Image (tube, rainbow, N blue to C red; front, side):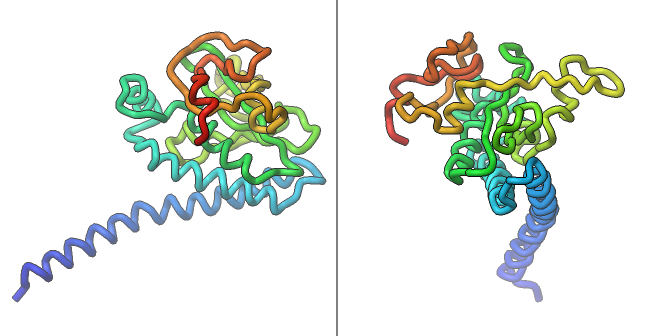
Length: 233
């Protein structure tokens, strides 16, 4: 005769099994993506350290997954942005993803790879921010995009010039002309080029033009509060 304890145990096992069915494909997909991105990063230049490429790939993937949980992403990236805009979430904009993934990548103290900040459709409703990784002394346009926001925590990556979702003119067959541009202020933050400047800490919803002379006056979507910029994490 089935007892209530047995029914409870069966129910728990069912939910655990269902959860594993959901998690396992994501984990397997991440493992394949980590390997593929590692190879792509290592192929950026002959001097790229394969160990650095693997560290960047693994860190970006695992951080994107963690941020999905931290941001409590629901439905899709756009809906999470809506929740941020109405005050129901503190973080979740594309710029937040780039800040937090970038902060983790900075901790790797890279020697053979370089981090850049990319912005597409700047100062428009379609604006997106991402991290771009290049080899040393390599053009921004020759790098690889790392975008945690676009797939809501499942890391998106591809060469900058092959990102057909962000082209200047989108049409069948694709133009191959990217709208991604480098934001030099935030690239400087990623590369720790000037430790005397206030570093980006917290983002707000302000959309205003950036001042190229001041790192504390960031891109259009991201405005750093001076108080937060001076405060420790």
